[in-house]
Length: 469
Image (tube, rainbow, N blue to C red; front, side, top):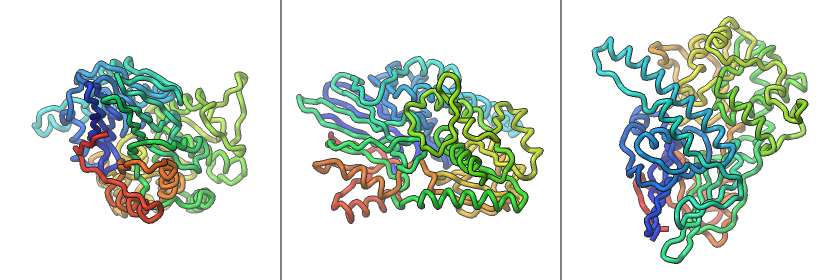
């Protein structure tokens, strides 16, 4: 019978990876994500894959975020030659995100090797290169939502809108083995129903086995309007204090939401800052892709949209005081501003990117305000700051955390506990349910909530577990 192996994002929120194998010999990899956060997790990215990449028929990807897609170039470099099935929008975002990741891998390795040479240590090689990534991108096969396709003999796949980021999908796999078809549904990352740009996640009703994410399995998000009001209050307090506002943000998804909210406040005369800097080449590129696929977005009537001649809009036009800084030279000019500006920069969990440079110039200032608008995985710099670290080490320096830190969970692009339970409750009869993509304590909280509210039992897999479909 067909088998499902749990190979990543097991009792943690990154490194998503699952393998489906049939008795007839089909082998389909569901997700190929990078581990992020703790040093030992990142070291796992260099370990050998727990399968032979050359034997895979295909890869199926739920969406473009690096924790779901980030090891695809390494998979290709290790010998995988099959198709990578994605939604059409995900295909475009992958090119943007993985080429950026490859460039960072090469540059970070070059920088690290300079330090290693001074210490007499041997050089390291990048996790993968731009050339690896360009080869992998040729393997993309785009599909529309609701369009069934065969990923391998006996494995039919259909993508459904997950409402998380542009192109994100709930993955339905109908697996035929020994003349019997079993349906596996992987939630991917389910979106927050309060998202200003995304549709609500598609409700499905039939499955034999469900893999459901549990990032926020332990709680519901704060009331949406209360979160917007809190953001406005923070911005006004920062204006009174005379400091800058830092917003570490994921380039795809969170950044576009923040531009929307700031544009809404600006149009209502409630944005005191005179300039908002988008200091992320990837986010600037993502804005263009979002604009290209605007028919997949659900725009609230409050958004200040001004169509261009071709009937399309640019996301940047929502916020007239937005200034983009694509080059490193442009980025450095922001540091001339000691007060009065908002700086949106990557990375979302503060593990790299230009936000670190802005931390160096602002984090130690008590008048600075740091707004954390999304989940921070255990082991990341962002998590350390949220947990109350008084100093942090970055760029081989130790910096005091004197800034006022604010966590805005209501802007999360992930479903909260009640939303997760509501989504899965529509499956009838009750499927075999496995919780993935969450920290263990969050999974356990969701497991208990499912038991209390639905009378359902959910399994929490161990890394390497294998089950029969």
